[in-house]
Length: 296
Image (cartoon, rainbow, N blue to C red):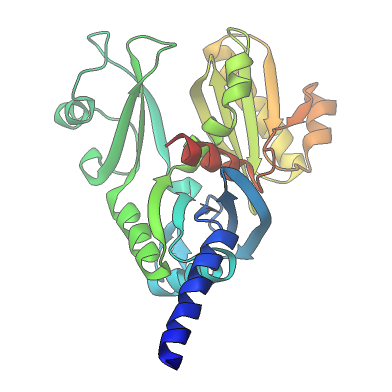
């Protein structure tokens, strides 16, 4: 009788826990030194946003090397902040995300674009061979005959899948960090006038990523130093290059997180740096993850 009562209470607790705790958890691993997590409940981000340092020497260049230790860390955080077996939507470390605009000689994307890329051995100037990469190819409606190729190392992806096998939960999506930022800025990109360059400065714990779009298409990416006295001249050179290559249109500049150099950029380059709208999400990457999770 007591055993039956205990089982009944455990079942009620599991049901109550599922109602109280969200079933989808967003994990931002874009900065390999910091893990940011937030849950979705009823389609909305909820508090708290939790941030923890990633232990030293668990990752190398975005690839997990201490797989079980990292999985145990994430698993403990999931037990603390989510329901049993949550669905996980994850932004991969920035270093692993690769993308490139590609023009097709025939003027249109082939039906079997990934196979065509590999068969033609097209050089995308990536650090990983196409045969060893997971690829996705999407036609660019704004630029007929061009495609956006997104990829990552198959070996690195499998290592992260193994991490989450130790962590528990149900892994739904592993998304390149750059794709998360693109989705988070979709509204701003859509409202940009033709020819306007839209730039995003996304600081991390040790550097600052610059992304530049024109007409909604990602055209340029560079890693800049974080210190203001180095970042401002480096940014000026990058924007000068973009204007010379993409056209001398106006530039609208955003910051994904609070950027120490924002005032210096406005004063020295004459470019105000707007804070990107991330709503109630704990980071701009989480905002992109949330929108992707709700759209799928």
